[in-house]
Length: 173
Length: 202
Picture 1: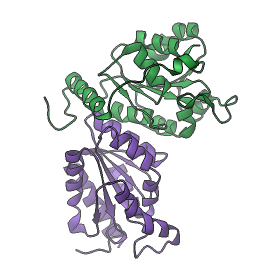
Picture 2: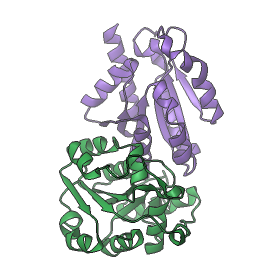
Picture 3: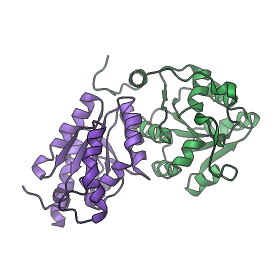
Picture 4: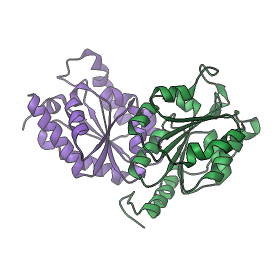
């Protein structure tokens, strides 16, 4: 199963490279550790581990204004801390952002401390009118490019929510 | 030193650098000194992210030089920004910390631990090598070339300044709507670099 998770991580990175992402700014969540590890080793990307999720928002916004494609990668809990930064920077200045995060708190996540994310993650996204796409199977990974380009079309952030099954290599096909 | 005098001096010494300002006073002072409508991104109310924003720019455009202004109020919210800066170690980024020991954008409310915060020591503790502190205009004038003009690598400069007076607090804020600033700044950067920021060129 671990190998499948690494295969999924590689496919996610291939998709990010395909749509022009160069900078990946990340904070860890156990579910995305394969993606982070692969990004750090992949010379197609500049991987920047940041001190807090808001720093990823600032970095990616600056990279966009410098004509560099970027993605912020984080856990759902991290996303819940960045609402101000997103609404103040990305919404005020109409700066696109591709944000990849874990769909914590969904059925199958056995961590009780993520129950709040199960309750509030999607309602918060909807409250700030931030479009999102859930990706639960490997054959849906191409939607990452769709989300990236949609973010640029509408000049707003878009989130991609990655399920446990996908990231653990348990989803099929 | 007087905040506006310090920033006016930096404006006079600017030689093509792209600037990112922080919320409130640094934006007011830089706007007063330059009325720059193209090569400055006035990042209003980001609550500590102006240097991260500038780092993203500096990474993307390594042939340009970038100055980031951060107030110490913003710095107190996110001192870990320096860990990221140090790790990125961008030679084209200079971070000016405007230390007035207050939240200047909110009526000069006091900072936590305001008398003991040693920002230069914090920066050195995070491994940043080029750290400078200036507490007078004369010192800044005499030390500017060694600290900033040398282009010797990622640099962190602490500028000890006085809080805005009541009259200075009434200085004009940069007047832009966000999208207008985005396009002015982005088009300027496109012209200077040939890059494609927005997916279409004019």
